[in-house]
Image (cartoon, rainbow, N blue to C red; front, side, top):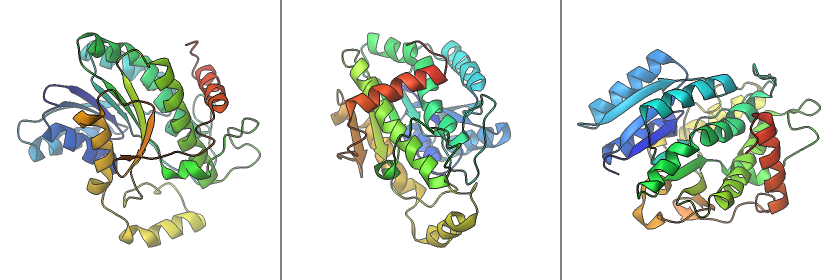
Length: 284
C-alpha cells in the first residue's frame, strides 16, 4: 500500500478510525473525512503519532447533505488527481425519522446515498489510478443487517412505517445492491467494487438512539468485539494483494460470503441504482 492514496469516511471513531490507521501503518497516504473539524484534525494527529511517518490528511463534510458531498469531492479531486482506495464507511442509526436538507430520510441519505454520490463524484480519480496501472478498489462497509432488510419502493423514506432498525437494514441492503450494480458497470475498468460486514462492534454506533433499541445496545456493548478487530475485514478488502481483480463480492470475517437473496436480485439492483441516481440528481 506504500504511496497509495486511500480515502476513509467516518474515520474519527470506531471501525473507520482503525481502518484508516491500519492503512497508514501499511504505508498509504490516508485521507480521512469527519463531520467535526476539531475532532477530525485531532484524529489525524493521533494517527500520525501512532504510525511513525504516516501521512494523514483531514477533510470535513456532513455526508448526509448532497451539497457537502459535492463540495468535498471537488476539494478532493483538486488535491488528489488519483485515488487508489475509497472506503465508504460513514453511517449511523437514528431512532427518530428526520429529513435532511435535501428532504430525504436521514438514514437512507447518510448510510446509502452518501456512498452513492461520493463514489460517483470520485469515479474519475479512481479511473485515473487504473489508467496508471494500479488496481483501485471501492470498499462499501455494509452490515449483516442487510439480511433482514427490504427495499420498500413505496415507502423508501419510512413516512408510513418508520423504525430505526428497519431503516438501517434497508440502507445496508442498499449498500450491497449498489455494490453489485456498480461492479457490473465497472467490470472492464480495472476498478474493484466490494461490500462487507465488519462484525458487531463496540463503537458509538447507536449513540443516536434511545428507547428499547438504545437500551438493549448499551447492555450488549461490553460483550462486543473491538473496533480494531472489526476493521480487519475492511483492511483485508481494501489492501489484500490476493484480492486484485476480485469484484462484485460480499465479505464477512475477511472471507467471501453469500449475501441475501434480495441483494442478489438483478432487477432490484437496477431499480435501486435508478432510484439512487434520481435522488442524487445524477443521470449516470
